[in-house]
Image (cartoon, rainbow, N blue to C red; front, side, top):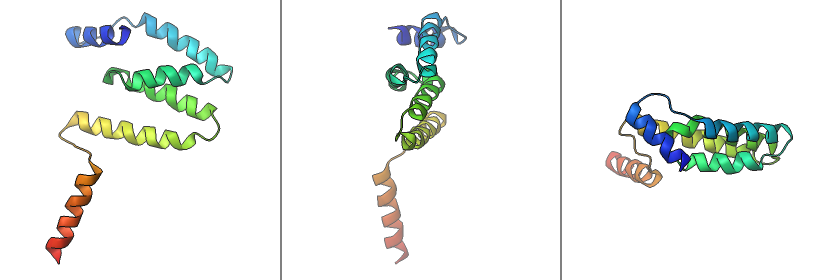
Length: 114
């Protein structure tokens, strides 16, 4: 509910919104991260990931930090960065990412050349 309210306020007012609840939670997550416990960062980061675009920076920061604190999760940072870059391209224009479409297009181009 908090994410939805904040997103609606930003859209309707087109300026900064009251993020007191999120700031409180983010502060507690930073404390947990300082203690070496990435669990809250994972949970809240994933919630932000699946919510609204206005939370992408916080999502990326939380998940990147959680991956840094967890052994064996460094490759997830690469996946997260790639996904966020695709989202940004999609938001800016008519970019549509589809691996199958790209492979089919490459295959058609090869056939046309032959």
